[in-house]
Image (cartoon, rainbow, N blue to C red; front, side, top):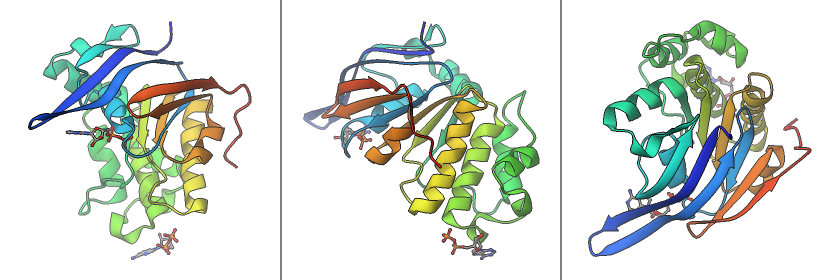
Length: 229
Ligand code: ADP
Ligand code: ADP
């Protein structure tokens, strides 16, 4: 059984009189420890399915089986627990807390889970051992995103969900960030899902799920993904 099974997921949003179909009958699987890229243009429905996978939203129809359990049936308390303990999130705009240091940002996130990793250790792993006491405003964009990755990894989650993680970065710093996400999958056996509109990122993936106009258009397994650097 795959680690994640998305089965016939439909998500509707009501906007006054208008109904928006953000996801239409999506079905795909994600293997444990794999690196999956969900690729599609803006408005295709990528964030919607990522939010559902992260327990931040629930589908209107369908099942989302994670590690054998359907999270679509979870109540709010179960969803909160799932978000805290099972999932690490990386966003396009880092979302660091400005008046906390790098180390404190990571420690705060880690403090809500029982078997968290040491904040300073994880920051060293992402190459920020010299930056523990800096504030986000003192760091470059690429460094801030590496703090965000450390923050996600410190929870020692099984699943890492990344929403356009290089969207605000230049090519070179983007590559550094992707290398860390690649390591999380290849070396640390995390299940990593990246959503992006950038086809370049698809090359690194084991599985590429193309979403267009709210629907899955193709699922392609790449036998020899191209390493980031
Ligand atoms: P993507 O991440 O691929 O850019 P989204 O999943 O953000 O796409 O959006 C898919 C569609 O659903 C878009 O038409 C968007 O406007 C709509 N949508 C997303 N979230 C909401 C919401 N909370 N309320 C209403 N419509 C939404
Ligand atoms: P990038 O081109 O990657 O966005 P920047 O030009 O913003 O990088 O910064 C280059 C280097 O200078 C980075 O290592 C960053 O941490 C450091 N830096 C930038 N601003 C500050 C600051 N206010 N205090 C300390 N270090 C800084």
